[in-house]
Length: 507
Image (tube, rainbow, N blue to C red; front, side, top):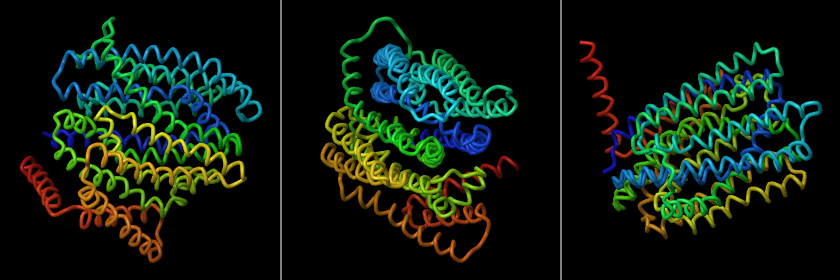
């Protein structure tokens, strides 16, 4: 049975983590842009993207470890949990070595001979590149320890570690301001140092809390074959996401230079902040999806998909709609100096975030089945469209904004395919999904757009105050239209009980 209490507790922990991380990120982005300058800021983003190109398979391996851990925990097989974790760790170590080899050969050549780097900054870019390799390797090695924490739903500990991470990054910014050395190199070096510390802590926590997640020398070959088969087909998906992010970033760098890369880096940060509103919630319920599927309870699974789709959408839309209407003023308030194209990039990124929030519960359900061959072939072909279409638009001399417009259209196409796949693969009742998930989202989104637009035209206040009014307005529409009667009653009961508990405590 789905543990709603645990999901709620984990979601709260992750949202506290997200709120602190978002505030730190907003502050550090402004300071970094001013401290490094537009060109160095863009250089840092695109150089790190080269290493990510070689590490894209890591996402497929992590997804495999996560899925099999969730499945075996749901089955209650402790021995199999140990086998999954140990196999996953050995594969990650081998893969980290491959990434180093590729990055120090092909990647290094691209950086020094092809990449568009501002004059006089190639030396600094090479240092950034080496620190990026170190950071990436550590992220690969610690991913099984991260996966075990999520699989066992220790979200409070996961949140605390994340908060420590962002606080250290905030301290890095302070050190950057007083550093007498090259600021771009200093920032990259300090970031790598934080990554070393976080990796050691993940290992320590895993060893002291999860007795089944241990590393032994032997490899369970049949299990490893299943995990690698799952990862193998998942490579297509990771490669398509890679093209969507780093590939398009390199295309923009080739045609327009690092100044536009800086605008895209900011837009990606806005996307990350907005999507974190729902990704934290989805991280909390992801293990429950796989465990419910492992118990073969399909009716409960489909009900859960519909609920989480709606809630994911509401969590994103309550902030994205206000931000769409006030993006320019908020960017000026946030950054001071706003690079060209930043506002247009951010607006389309927010719309992409809305679509991705709808897609999250669907692809998580697909992954829970473990049978992803057909799904990955088709969804990867869809997402790969980003690269040739964007390259064509840039070659024709169109605005860089078209790169994000293309991505938005491809995201909608991908969401449509995910619905179709679950309908054919798991016989998900389409009518139920449309009525219980899609219809309420539409009933919230379009009225909210109209109301916020009307308020925008009639009220003239500072952007921050208007944004707050828009958030409250959108939230009220969600409560009145987006929730059914039972959900409103349940929410009212939770609030009343909360206040009663607080009053009793004070009395």
